Image 1 (cartoon, rainbow, N blue to C red):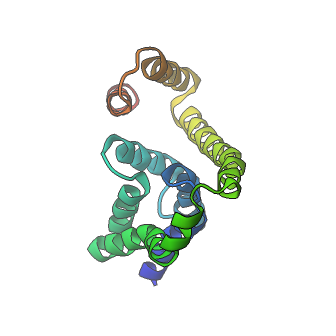
Image 2: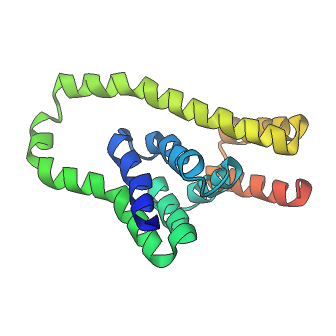
Image 3: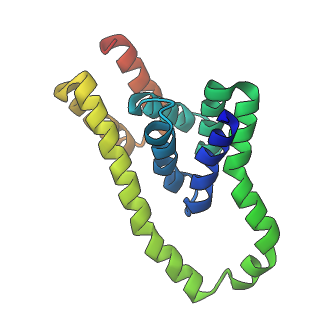
Length: 176
């Protein structure tokens, strides 16, 4: 039964997560944290941070890790297949149609319509992470991490992997 749940937990976000990894992350969080309760929001945010620090597609890395934690090696394989399966099947079946209509104004308009929904989902995810950090670490620590991360990323253009590693180090030293 756990393998079916793992498959559904990653297949559904793969189907409805139009826009790739960033659009699928809040959907995966809903399945993993809220629906099945395999991890807390805090644990999910740590998996997300680890996945962002590594190269490659974020949802695939998260699926592998979460699948392994829940169902071992077979669970990791099932979760990874469920993540890449929808795209793989649609690309195989719809390749000609995609190629024919790739420059269509209607397809471009669809992408412009969906981008605000993706932004809202990502904003909700960021709010949930902020709230979890605030409740477990305190306002000043959370505010410090947010401001320093923002400055490092936007002003000094530090690579996100280094910012994530610094955040992990800060948490390990000062918040344990």
